[in-house]
Structures are given as structure tokens and as C-alpha cells.
Amino acid sequence: MIIMSFCTVCGHETEDKIPLGDHQLRRVCTHCGNIHYENPKLICGALAIWENKVLLCRRAIEPRYGLWTLPAGYMELFETMEQGAARETREEAEAEIDIEHLYCMYNIPRIGQIYVLFKANLKEGYFGAGEESIECRLFEEHEIPWGELAFPSVERTLRHYFEDRKIQKFPVHLETLGTRLDHTG
Image (cartoon, rainbow, N blue to C red; front, side, top):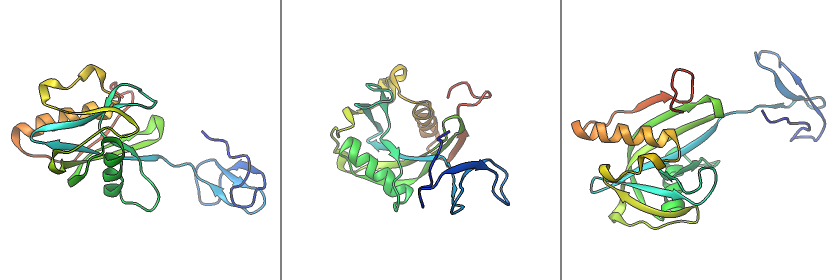
């Protein structure tokens, strides 16, 4: 939990209290009454495919430096999830994509994140390594570095894809990761 000691609107001190009509303790400004909400971070990304191969990026940043991931990152203000997924793919893999549809969504409440991944096609098979990537590569299923994947959401998405590909049906997958019921997150 982030402690917001001073109001971002007027600069006065804040205090913990439950605002009228609310049910949770929040930081509230003692002067102007502004409520400082803490909300989950939204991560958007893409499962980019080219000729039945999956695009993965080897991270050049923390967390999980040196491990493989799908191109994804925090959604920015004033963009859609699809725009964010395309931007992240461009930034991390120097690649342009055509988004097909929403593919996987993961609630990760223990770290306050929501992961949204789109199934997409890599345009013209072109990619490179952006500033946040050591390298990017296309992988066939048998080449996936399963023991070197950065996040449980990446592994789950890849496993869904390879299973779904067998029957050529790609439904939306919605899951919660990182709970006591799910020991993979």
C-alpha cells in the first residue's frame, strides 16, 4: 500500500478514513476532501504469431532481467488496451501487429495487476529488439524456453495457445493467478 501523506490536489495532509458511501479505508485530504484511490495496474500485451511461431522478448529490464516474455507493459492514459498492446510490441520488439481478438485476461490480486493479452499476427514477420529487450525471437512450440519464462501469465498464455491451436479454436481465457488455489502465480 502506498501512503499518500499529502493531497495531490491541494497539498494538505491526508488521513485514513472510510468515505461516506464507501466500505474501505482510503487516504482522504483533511482540507479539500479529495479521496486518493489506489487501483490495480493494467498490463496490455500481445501474443504475436508469424507462421505458427510465437514472438518472445528476452527482458533487458527488471523485474526478471534476462528471462523471456511476451511483449507487454503498463497501459498509458488516453489509449485503448489494443493500442497499448500494439505500442508495447513496437517498443519491445520493434514489430507491428494486427490484433485479432482478446485472448487471455489474468487477475493478479496479490500484486494489484490485471494482465490483458491479445492474439495478434506479426506484420510481414519483421521484428527487432527494442530498448527493453536483449533479444527477440520467433519460437516453435518445441523451442519455447519453458524454464526461462519471466511470468506465470506468459507460461499460461503460451500453454493455452498451443492447446487451442490443436483444435483451431481460440476462446478468451479468464483466470486469477497467484492465489492459494493457484500455486503457479
